[in-house]
Length: 133
Image 1 (cartoon, helix red, strand yellow):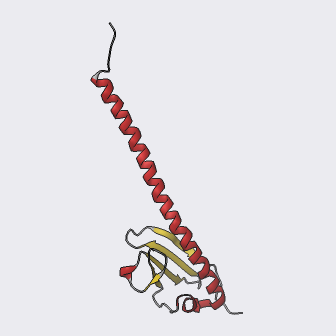
Image 2 (cartoon, rainbow, N blue to C red):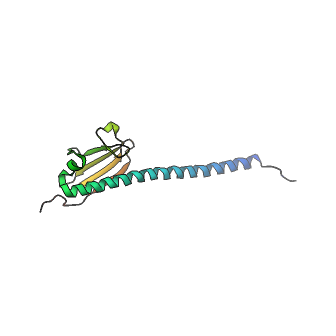
Image 3 (cartoon, helix red, strand yellow):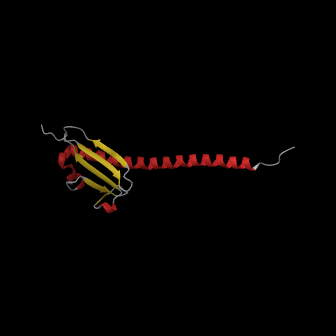
């Protein structure tokens, strides 16, 4: 006797396999997309941190006055989604914080404000940066 079609079990198994494969592909695509976005954030803030390094070499502890136009006592700078400095937290997408540790080393952190995703963590600009000879 010849079969002319598929049984219901065969169709259900085929759909289940298709659903599993589709779930894996979509999860991979979502993960890749998020990583691409985070890498874009990192590249932009890497350039900003390179500028901070140059300014802190040139102007030492007053680098923020020359770079940002202010001397931030709290060490918090807010950036918009197009990487421009904004005055308030409400318009910010990113938060850059900087501080000095016990060895007088400049430490910079960058996070995405809403998700608290870390973009740059504890970037240390090195020791003895501001020691006068």
